[in-house]
Length: 413
Image 1 (cartoon, rainbow, N blue to C red):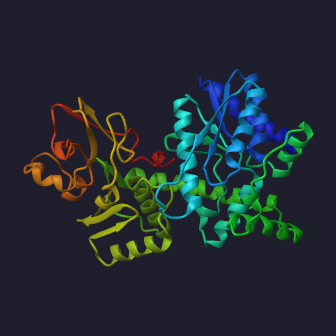
Image 2: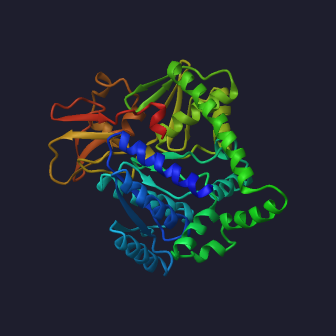
């Protein structure tokens, strides 16, 4: 029975959490049928495993119904003795695609909540139809193997682990469970708006199913591609061990593999790590970079990275323009990887060294890094004055920490 399989998948997550000595899980619950069913199924299983389960709802402020839906979920949780929190996300200055911004904001809010509450992971309710819809969306964008492969059952975002235990569960099974329990759920009006690509794919799935191409068949193909992707990642890992080394916040590549796909994958991984991007650069942009490398171009930029070549070695460094607006305070990681320890003056912050390098006349005596890398690296500033730049020159009062695991392939996940 599909519902029993869903329960078994959830139970496996609970037992794994307990086996690792962890005590709490979270659930992202919008109030829609998928996430509400996930929560209802998870409650007794978590209690049976002795785990604390909490829920959170993100109110994006984009629909008038959102606040009422969050209150509905809060009431559902209160009736079952669960801790619930409503997380607010508000769009700042528009910077691109609204859906992408809202998704990024949602995961950032959930990750912050999960870390604050001491959660081992956060459960999300992606299901079989989500896998099939995503496959069709990416097919329309001419995605390759990585894009067409099924969603991973787990991933990391903003330093938090997210789990998708229901990827093999049909959406209707979840709705049937709620109906059987007499539990009402919220319907997002945008789910019927064909202006959204995902809604178009949902309608298309109905037509494809009538022709014999079911969500189950599409999901099975996506899983097969995921197996192939896993094999490709193992090959990448072997190449990475022999060709890539970390130099402070830069990656040095000792020549690209002869195989075209192996070279592409290695470059993509390096650019994603240094560029702090959850997504790979577009194929067209990557192709231009590779054409430039083959033509002997020694300096190019892509996806927040500066790619240079010297004596056959590629250096993937951070691009200054990409980090100019980034600032952080004492306990925070700057650019996702750097932290400056020590006693900070009041009002100090971490920002890129940038043109401040002109104040460090002897940086070549202390650092093996090129000027561009140092300028895009961290420095301690206070009211416009440069206090320390430990990447460029060691400072006895300040220590520079590079985040553990930076430069390794697991850092991508």
